[in-house]
Length: 392
Image 1 (cartoon, rainbow, N blue to C red):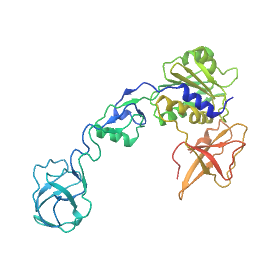
Image 2: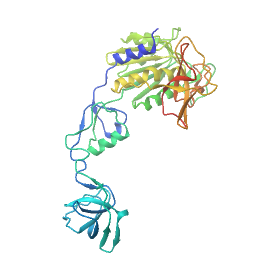
Image 3: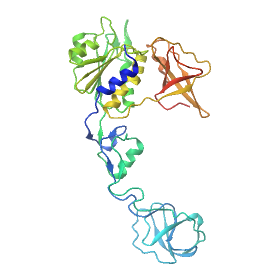
Image 4: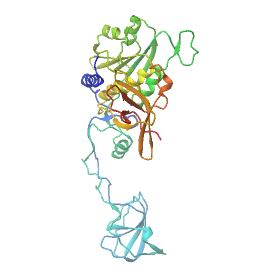
């Protein structure tokens, strides 16, 4: 049995990023750029007004000006601004030739065709040509993760088919003859399949769109046959332990996978198996839903990050424990479902009531995992892995 840190080191070593490809901009969210993206022009393309107001020559002095016209955003001014003249101008509009300063409309007093501009401040309120980017400037570097702001930058640069590292294709097998579809009423000895929907949502949260799933009975041949796939990442729910009906690791060996570990000092999730075959990776996760939740955030999410060339995330911080919180240590490192809340600028972690790894209800509202072990130096705080932004 190995510690989680060693398991994560092995995963990081054994999984290589997928080959880069070009995708539509609408499909690039959350992915990683495979190459630099450079500016294709000057940004802005010309001197533009930062304000609604009046544009005057740079050498003008405060006083009364003749309003020679107006320049809305999108217009191409063909006039040359003469001394003693100004133009009514709007935010984002190009300055006319000769224009060098914009006076805010709040500083102006308009009377017919003339306007009094009594005060010129130090700021010119002009976005100068090329002040944000010049042709060839790298605006997004290879390795950048594409969030909302980065997508806006790509759109501005006209990079509508960016080359990215794509998310892995995931094949999921829910094993167990006791599983039935959630739409059905379980018969004697049966349970509804929760893990499929849990994993589908978790993978979606980390950018995986290609998620194929099926349920199979506890049969070694059926498991091996269903596990043969061209997907990048194979997940077997159940079949991870050493019982007579746990065929996960055996199926992987039969298919030529190399098992790198099958026990982790982790609670819940001790019988977690990780294997690879060429560029493919596979996990066998113990069947209980809390084990699935913990194993995903402790190990499987790292695999997705490796496939997509994203920096490995492990946002563990010390957070004050809620008053009266109780945590029961175990010889293994327990990652306890919890909810981190923020109030008056202070983070507080509230451990969930957790009766067993089969207690799906304990996951409601979970946005963090708290590390609990005999050596935890709590003193009113706990090492907390943040999975989502803190809740109010």
